[in-house]
Image (cartoon, rainbow, N blue to C red; front, top):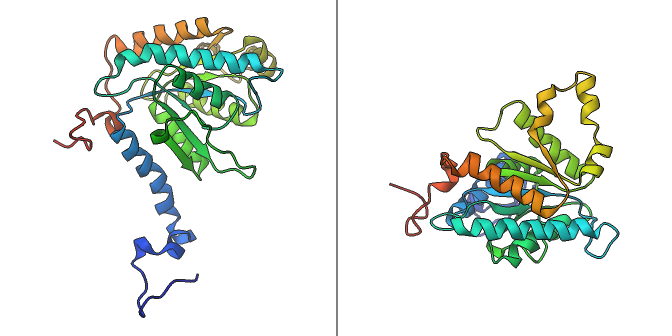
Length: 266
């Protein structure tokens, strides 16, 4: 490990780039991917999110462009609705993985409604760049997949999953498992968009029939095939579980109610 020695002195540890990039400092890098977004969400007063997953390979003018357009429309509808709650905090902010395809469409729809929108980007071998529709102050870059997953789940009150591949399936199963095992201290709404696709890709009925999941597990999610139906499912569920009656806030984020007191201190 090479280090810069200036006037015979080593740099202090927190300025020592060689140390910070070493295996010994891995825990610091992991903590950074928790603490830096935490502070940023507090300052931007983000209380909770609606997460949209789906393929990066679906493009507006491609053969599956309908899903792109529907994701954009749904995100716009959700943001137009959620804008009414923007006061001391921002509610139900559209959040994606930050890349192209369905992620871009959802961020774009939120931008169409003049709302804030979040992108949780990840460094990949085939470099995934943040799309242009993410609010600049809410564009994040992660190295560790599990820290990115944490931020997807921690603030989410709902999840909309459009057709996608391995990454989309991974995120869907992660949230379904957390909900099934009651590891989420909240009700999370899960909508699978495109029933024909999902019923072909995953045979949930067969999982029940073989005893791999319980019959009630298929009630953890609902299907939708058009933006208006998905919007109604989300709106009605959010009102029932997260607005009426009012539920406790996410302590680490939403305590910053006073813009003059961004750290939420008493």
